[in-house]
Length: 243
Image (cartoon, rainbow, N blue to C red; front, side, top):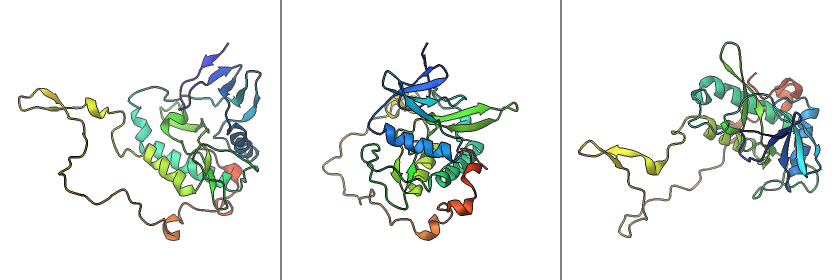
C-alpha cells in the first residue's frame, strides 16, 4: 500500500514498505551520487539513495519525523532562535561534508545551473522550512533531523546556499499574507481593500535602478563561513543539526 507523504516542495512522494518513492528526472543520477557521498562520510541529515523501482521511481530511505507539510501559517517555532541556530549549524556541517565531493563526469543538475568548478560546493539550494524534518523532544523542544527534496541541489558558492537559508528562515517579512487580500481601515472604520499595484504612470519621475548588485563578497567577510573541512574536523562528526 502506498501512503502519500506531506512536506517537501516537489510533491508526488509516497511511502512504500518503509521507503520513499519519487519520480525520477534527468538529474536523479547526479543527486544520487551526492547522497551516496554523504552516506559514505557518515552524514546523517539526508536520505539514502537506493535504486529505481519497476515503476521507474527512485527509492530513498525514509527520514523519520514530522514536516510542516501544507500547514498555514507556519508554526511559530520555525522562526525561533533555536531553529535558526540548528539550521545554521547544520548547513555548516553539510558544507564541510560536501567540500571534497567532485561530481561525476557529465553530471546534470537543475535547469539554469552552471557546471561545477573548483571552489564550488553542491548546495542544497532549497533548505527551507517546508523541506525540513523535525522530531519533538520530551521537553517539548523541536530537534532538526534533516532535509528532504534534494532536487534543487547544484553547484554554487557556499555563500549562495547560505543566503537562501537566511532568506527562508530569518523572519524578515510576514509569511503567507496574500497581498491583494489585505485590508486597511477606511475613513468610516470599515475595512477597505488595499489597491493593487498597477502599471507605472508615464508621468512618474524616474528613480535610480535599485536592482543592481553590489560588489562581490570579500575574503574578509566570507572567512567566517568558508572554513575548510580540515579546520572543521572530521566530516563524520557533523549531523544536519547545530553542534
